[in-house]
Length: 364
Ligand code: GGG
Image (tube, rainbow, N blue to C red):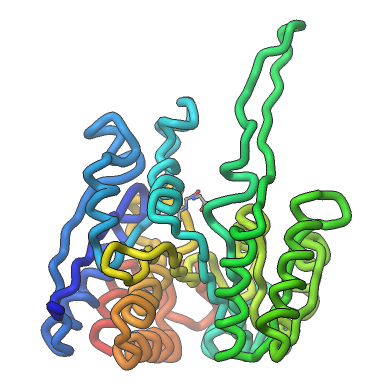
């Protein structure tokens, strides 16, 4: 087997290309100093692809993603395309990659760096040491369930429909990822749904409970309604180790959790999926934040979530734990030194641009 890894880079829209430029510096450093051998391809997705090719993602790009050892994704979303139908929205790029490569388990770690306890929305004593993993299901649920669409009724009013659908295998496979992760972390899983009002939530709870009984009785399992979970994350986030939940709740709860760490610009993610032809797993790495059109082009975006996404790529896809840990340590040291992008700024710290933050992490 060749030790050259195929990496597909998809910067996307808005701040996506800006923060990806900083990752490129880290990638270059790893190639020069750590013997990382990469065959890198870069392609347009999202609004950038719509503008050039008329589609949010081309079939050729999906094929490249299928062949790649890992995909490093930026962010998609562009207000210029907000008026168009769903099949022509920039976000279709990421939804299609998740579906076509069966990227079903999105790992979203929310970790509070010691240097950033004061940047958290919560009091330092509530968040210090927080290390939480949200496992979000990403190819099912209300994002993809049928029927869906907007129809015009006989009286001229319109009706918008989405449907939450989950099957037993879909729930089991993502729960398995959560239980396996818990075993090498704090050994606790909290399964989150809304079984008090939703049939899909009832099935979710039943399937997770059965799987736990059959295969994971050694892991502590609890269940929580999604609304209660949102409240508990703000009240006492350290009660959680691994949270496993559906597509929509996972998206919302992880954005909430990001503010416990200081900023949406701090949270990376890994989305793991189906088997490739060679038996290995497809995987895509992206920050949880979107394209942030309001700050795009200003050189102030925080590149840390994108850089930490590359660290997750090294850990999960390339099995380079030492290199992943080195990047995380560099981020921690730079934050300790007092450098801050504007989103994590607090009194007495030095506000720096996207590229100065990237350079500082590489130097470290
Ligand atoms: N890097 C994440 C990103 O680009 N998000 C855009 C988005 O809206 N994605 C849909 C989703 O993840 O729910």
